[in-house]
Length: 296
Image (cartoon, rainbow, N blue to C red; front, side, top):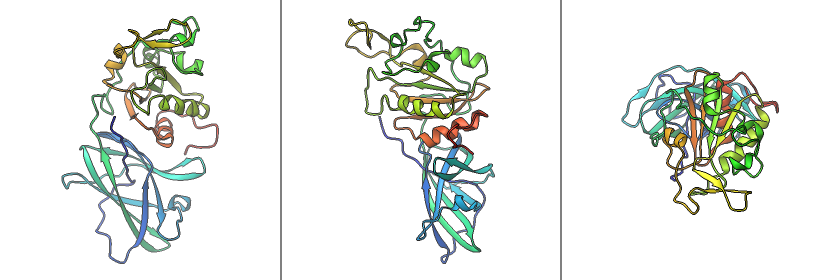
């Protein structure tokens, strides 16, 4: 699976070309995955030389995005400082309508002195998954009721959390629950990232105990002969995706989908997943805030 490492910035406004004598900014893009549609974007911005973080001083940013074909995005999304553990970032909801590389020009006035910097944001094709903003596909994912509370019959997670198997995806969608849906597996890993998304969800659940998180194995699995561990069904493969995994259009896990209370896809992640951007997406769809002190 190709790595998806991307980048971006914040408030989008027409911006004149940076003056030659502007002081420089270092623009670090903290959100790593963006798709066609409206995205949460996270960014750290520092004064070059001093290393001072602008978000710590609540400095207002302006940003101009130039698309792959030279078009300039002019919009004014809400911009805020997003607190994560030990630091603050900038966050905005940004519409991105074209696959490819976007140039992000950032401008700010710091103590009366103009500063500017830039970065590159790549927008990727949906890879067969539903587009952002679309209604989430339904799915009768297995629950602990189906397994008679024997969670190792439905999950290859070595330390499964009961909360991840309380609801089926259909249940959550019917109840209008903001939901994080993860398709990942420890039992069969076709790439190095497999299992990592599920591990991150364990950490996130500690911070957001009120969010509905649903894990489902993406492959058809059955208990092995020892009766203690899931294996591919049929034994030895080939690996066959479940109906609900196919409904989401995935070809290879891991995938994490964040769904709002209206049942629409708010964010999605694959491969190596950044915990900050996952937390930012969750914060956008639920009033719950991290019990550990993060959030806005």
